[in-house]
Length: 240
Ligand SMILES: [Zn+2]
Image (cartoon, rainbow, N blue to C red; front, side):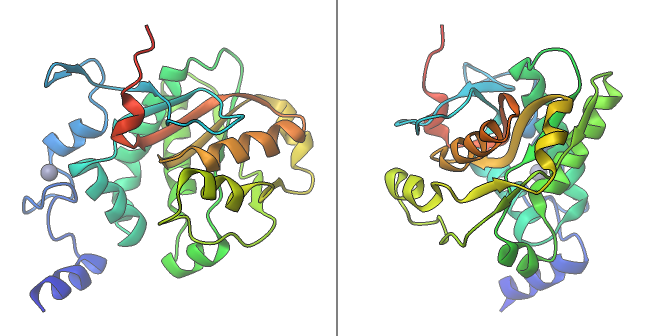
């Protein structure tokens, strides 16, 4: 009952740090650092945005950079934003995503951040579109740093896909194949810059591969993809 009450209270009042529960803060400094510890050093592993790759990688997956591994505080923060509507977290999550976009080095010229769309039903159920909100915060952060960037919500689901949770890599690929399309008129806008696909989380990479296919088919130039977090196993490849 107490847990339930805390969940409910969290909808209207911050009950503590979204990452670790420490009281009287929406996000403590330590958990904020776990999201974007650029250049820092922890547990012998370089932290900050890194290139990630799931194994197996789906065909057509572009280069992907992630700000952090999906575990512990990072996982808790993403869930608080997505499922509990802790919208104040969009700013720090956007900064983390902007770091991943910079890590990608997408080249000069204006950047078009294209969010991987959620199912319309999920957006309606949550009352907000978490990935789009994080993307908007990331674009603001990039512009503050002198990089021309804007969000282009160019993709939509053209058919219903089943919930990805519980599906394996191959099943996710099949579930998503041909599921996305560029919205009417979006193809023209795609030519205004380099496309960076953005999402909150990469697990198997199936959604990003499908998004890259849809954007490429509509004539967009995909420079790569950036996510806030990726499965810890996707960090294991040594790119040297
Ligand atoms: Zn914390």
